[in-house]
Image (cartoon, rainbow, N blue to C red; front, side, top):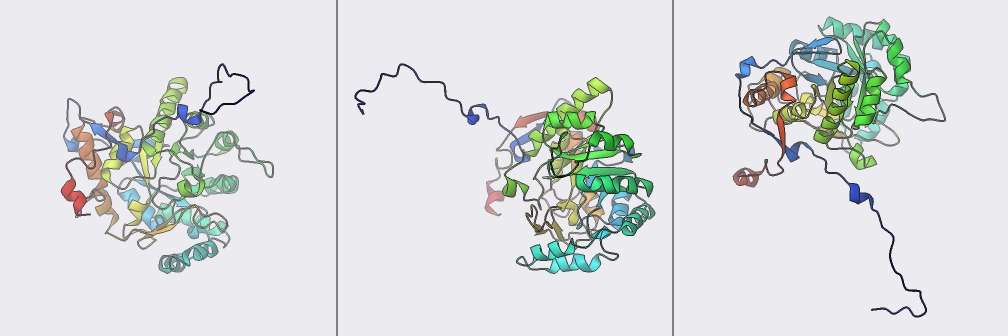
Length: 393
């Protein structure tokens, strides 16, 4: 004991508070499992169809606006299978008349050189004529034209795309908020933008219920959920931000339901990123998502323009890349990835068949019924009894 001579006696200490005192648990796909209930249904009786922002979907799958995933031909292929692809308005499809050469260069670049190659590729200007042409090509391929742009580009390209036949516009940024402050420029007003756009405007991405509710109040036709979970995204490492997807989806779904009760308008929730297998898609919908957006799982299709690689949308940044090129390989046609037959046992093929089988086992005939199934905290669900499988990996 240290004696402090001459010091006054301390009768009490103030209460000390730590931010960790109020920390809450959050959950990703590997933390939870879906609990069977009292009924089951036939897989053939499961209905996966819905209206999404006024467009009919036969399956709840969107293709991410990534250059290695979506071009007009891919949009047509996914549409024929019941989904919807988003074209990146600030990507190589709108910068190059024939993007195949630059796509091949990105795919072939060494790991040491790829960042420089990406930066140079995206330095070419976006061309009005190419934006209009790609929209026409998507329609010619048999798909509705869904396009995506960052908030900084939305004011320029939103009205242009609507005038040239786009059916849905996605304003997508790293983190979307209802109030963006800036001193050097006039930020996009979502309320004004949605009011004057003649086509539906979806918004992403967020992980926060209050932000999602405010985005819905400002006219968002759908809200995309996910900050940093994508396989090619490095936002969580570079910026240290993000919420595990199950928690983020459930929080935003709660905002959707509250907004529906107040306004009478249903705003779909899109789980964007972090899903590779059928079971993860099932968990995303059970957590509250209406639709899932996939990037890298679809980049593995032979129809994908990336040729077996993928990269994050923020990867080309010459200052602070928040994505990377990854090699995902090519496993076969899009039909095989979505509808099988699967030739692997890890759940990465026949994604729609797996979702349908999961819903049938849980007694859910529709997406809305799937959103009502029980979630349980189950961190051991992937390893329990699997010692031989784990040993072989």
